[in-house]
Image (cartoon, rainbow over all chains, first blue to last red; front, side, top):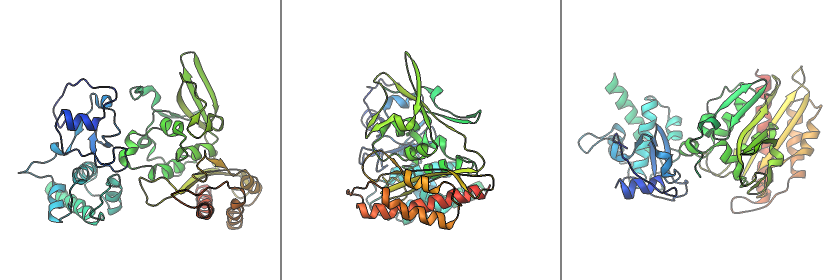
Length: 151
Length: 242
């Protein structure tokens, strides 16, 4: 979990979402619909995006999980976080942890994504404020920053 | 009960003219097939619009088929590939046509102590191709208004249609239907613009349609015709493009 091991006994009916929020106190993981439709509870599990409301906690055994708490820090933000601020892309902010994780997960695999690839990568997260335009711009900007740093 | 640890049920195998897909294969596992293979193209069609990347990570082939809630995208595709399913339980295994496995909405032929293990189909020949088309309010995370899967195979000249299968989903709130009248009408015809247009026009005559919160019956009928045309054109292009 964000680079640390946790030993927990979970009920067979517990959702990963609840274990993260209530037992590990990772409140950056949000619950929206709770039925897999909105994606605001997105976390990265073994390098893939999942909706934590749809993952039984037992399936997280021996998996690497990254939540927003494991991405960047106040002093050292991830390029996606920085770009979202620059573009004023967060309005209510509820979906933003999920958008950051979806953007980061894309850029980890593909530092030069097309606009279409960005759209597809964040397509599992519903944002009711922005109309997505600024989110896409921000991920694009973060991609150039990452490429710049690497170059 | 959590089956996700049964990694022996997660595979895509191609052997002896058969494609075998384990029930715990995820939709993400199906992505990125060769577009020019007779079955890879249709899997790309269906995975590209399946849920969202988040859903594709965990959703499985077996889960999609066993739900039979009338919105599953893989079911019409596998119906047109004439797929078989393999069910297993402690006392043994049995195989049956997918068509027989789907009993009614939310009901499969599985016994209470049985699980779906595999979906398989014969690898289509070099002159066969499948396609899938889906229409909804947006491109991801949607339940379609209508979806259409098609399979066509031609003779050696790649002009006359030898085999045709069409399955439609989301029309009536029931399990996917085959359009057998249109399928029969396609046999022996030239695979060309005229035949495709005529099939699309005839489709309206044999659909069982209902209206619901997503779309009206009339809209579904028109959308089904357009999607059928697009799917057949895609089959044509895949057959000719080889």
